[in-house]
Length: 375
Image (tube, rainbow, N blue to C red; front, side, top):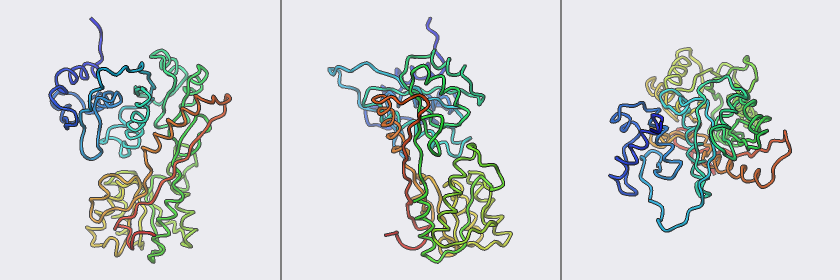
């Protein structure tokens, strides 16, 4: 009898017993609903749904649900399916209950799977579930399947031994990073212009003391582990300087990325009597918590304090007031990753030379930022 993993057995059950009950375009049960019905974990069901999505069997509309795809035309001759493997440190990174910025990884995977599907690739995801990376991990990846490329949706420098071994075996490796990576082909967001536009908008509205909530502090080392936080801190400092505003050290607050963290940080600032008339929260989740804390304290947004976040989550448009945010398009990141892969395949680089592509973020104005829509 052929051995199947638990996720493979669940997928077979869905394909044989569940999906045939629905017509193409109809909404199917969510991951959470199906996990409850089949008595399995949400993370396991997430993997099942993602595998079906990467093969084009189902598709997701953000904020709406998951739907059954149209079946392929039976008389159309399909080319052989090829595979690209995505390497994730842990399945927990895709769990909204455990990782506040889970969608950074999820959307990169989903949109990359979407981008490669037209060329008859499917995306297979492998979870290492540890953080002591070595060339042994690369050997295990090479033994799993013959794939031309490996995607790293959440690059960290510690993955360099894996990437070096895979590259030596003739595989293309690329991933998402906070800047051009020195150890892998990469794509990243440039947030400088977007943060500068947001701060200039606040300054034009008379804001002079802008606070920042993020999970880094200047006394901490400038190492890649804090790369995204340092990128935001530096962009904020440059934006203040460009707008002719002072950087007020007491208004830079160390704050983890969750909603409750944003609530706590703003509540403490108010209790300490700190004066600030605007707030840049380095995730929308922090900003949602900040809005709640300000509301409970009787502080009006944007009349007394303007607020903007980062990520442009779906809830931004529906919260009260609607939340302004810095948006980096993960669909664009995924498309650029695939474009970079095709470029590398057409023109293989010299050993040790790593290419990169920059994607520009943009400022999305909403009522929480005050003033009118920027020209």
